[in-house]
Length: 320
Image (cartoon, rainbow, N blue to C red; front, side):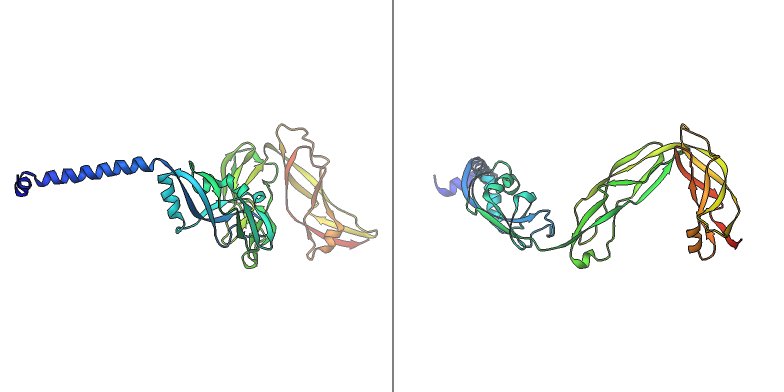
């Protein structure tokens, strides 16, 4: 049979099916072969991250790691292509990086072995490290300790109030950065803590607001606030001036104040008859106008807060 006769018997559809069959056979063969394990030398660029006091969090440049690995064909294809791609970012523990000099730190093959799944991927076995030591340069950075300040919006259920101050653990963090980035930073702030209808102790974790160009030793802090149920006791208290020199008299107006005391419930003691408001003569002498804010003495046990009216008092000194 001539070639023309054969060609006439084969339709275009048969040609397409034949080509697809060949392609499918090739794909099956390729997948089958790539599923086997192979040994190959690979090169991977590593960018190091590490929390080192006085140094930047990230190394200034990547280091190239050369190793002989055993992995599936699929994994090796990705690793062989990785040398020309963006570096793999690896966070090292501070104890695994050794200080050589100045800004220079290094890690040996012995410590690198623990990070091989991050670097080469799960299922890849490193048979030998051709590069037995990697060197990274971590630029110097300034650092200092600053307090944590909370941003909060809190509202309490009726007859409940904070019986302490909002505390953070840790109450301060170390900030790292260039001198210009750290300039003017006296505190760090938390994200907003917003709670409503509070009727018991408040605690939880909150993130610290990030600052551009600045690294924080802690990204979150724990907060805690004591909250108590209270009762109000209204009373009156005399206002007096103490430590007045001999031969001098200080007259206070008004001499009696209305006082509202908030005490923890249940009441331990409701006695307020011994409570008094005191103005120290030295504070009076420091005032320019003679208007003074008194201190409260002999508060009832379990007192959370005290308010009085008026809040300031007129003081006039006269000679006897």
